[in-house]
Image (spheres, helix red, strand yellow):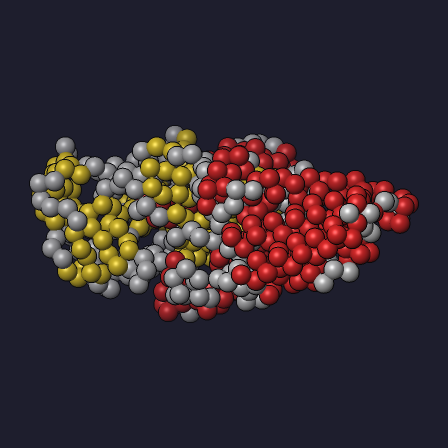
Amino acid sequence: MKQRIIGKVKGVNGPVIDAMEITDAQIFELVMVGENFLVGEIVKLEGHSAVIQVYEDTTGVAPYAPIYGAGIPLSIELGPGLIGSIYDGIQRPLDAIREKTGVFITRGVQVSPLDRVKKWHFLPVVTAGQTLMGGQVLGTVQETEKYQHKILVPPLISGTVKYIASEGDYCIDDQIAVLLTDHGEESLTLSHRWPIRKARPVLARRPLDIPLITGQRVIDTLFPVAKGGTVAIPGGFGTGKTMTQQAIAKWCDADIIVYIGCGERGNEITDVLTEFPEIVDPRTGRSLMERTVLIANVSNMPVSAREASIYTGVTLAEYFRDQGYHVAVMADSTSRWAEALRELSGRMEEMPAEEGFPAYLPTRIAEFYERAGYMDTLSGEEGSVTLIGAVSPPGGDFSEPVTQHTKRFIRGFWSLDRSLANARHYPAIGWLESYSEYLTEMSEWWQNNVSMDWKQNRDDIMDLLQKELKLQQVVKLVGPDALPDSQRFILEVCTLFKTAFLQQNAFDKIDMYSTVDKQARMLHIIITYYRRGSEAIKAGATLVKLRQMKVYQDMIKMKFSVPNDDLAGLDKIEARLERSFDQFDVIYS
């Protein structure tokens, strides 16, 4: 990377540096500050002055220290070796840094994001003389046993293939192709760079009508998210935001997971780093890390790098999407990212808006979430980026700016309820405040692939939960005994649904994950219990008799007793349920 002196340090205010004597620089240019070459980015230009946001500790930087320009925007390197890596917010590999400097990141340390010594077996898929457009596939590298890395032409380059390397082993920097472009010859390697703040181009957006299956019943059944969708998970401290995102990352059917630990506590990221390598992906039988990229920018790391980490993560996701993969991004949490924006904005003496956040906070949130989508890629493949962002409102106040602005730009809202978390009901997603705007588009998929009555059953149980809320208000005033059996039965069914369906045990080998078929069958059994039970009560049966049915205990335990790959047990439970109610029909007819 070419470096040239473009100015000098005028003043230092934490991670924000005022620069003077600036020449030949551009906005958002990557720069290095001082003799330690601290990584930074020009965020404001005015005449021969500039404001630089530095992504490292600026202790010791003095006035008149030189500033070096790289001539390119803040970018990340994309190529083989990303899968299984652990980066900080500006794509520095933490494992390589530990080997070089020890357990703490030394200021100015420069380590390549990708292994430049390791050789990759390259298999070309184009021939000389072929015309290629940006984003098309040059060849493939088998990065892991299950993941094939497709080597792409950089999106803004197109031309005729003059040279393509033969099948063989190559390092990241080895030339594998030469394109004849309108501007001359362009040499290509196994990797290329892309600015993190610029969305990678696509051909077209597709409708969001295919669900991202998470294995979490409260999500898949009540508030599903589409592949390419956007979701926020707001909740106060201790309500389970990180736990919910980790469960989704472990079990969802995305091809690639990008997990961004943005300003979270180090112990939470440590859990991810220790658990993910040990978890076996149920779809591949391999370690979960073989489809995961981790960005660990914890709370004790420089605050400005926290601001960049979100863009680094979504750029990585777009790169995998362009190869034809479905990617799920877990951003934990966007509130810490917004707090970094607020701190940097304050240091730059910008006019604050509500609660001290910068006036451009809604714009930045929108720019982040609009990079999600189900796309037709430049390579002719289909791929998607699903963005799931945790929000940490202070004191659990959902009226604060980050939560309110986020709701404007997302279509899924999984509200975490503190009362559920305190009752050890996990996932603690409240069914009254949460919503999903993807239901209508995805109903056809559920009916064609899972169950024809899924939408009706889902609507029925949501209606019962609404009725239960009103009945609970009456119960608080006069007690449950004042209600007729028909209304008490609604309370009974909703309690069964919460216990046997919504509550999920992440430590149980069967219950930690539920297939969509199992979810639909469980819901069908509970709805059948309600419909047949309501008819029996109308015919003269009592609630006490319904509770005494032996099959009732089977329904409570069915999430533990019936494995995902053998649903015959659910058939038996439903058959016993029907027989029990048939006996009621004989008695009360």
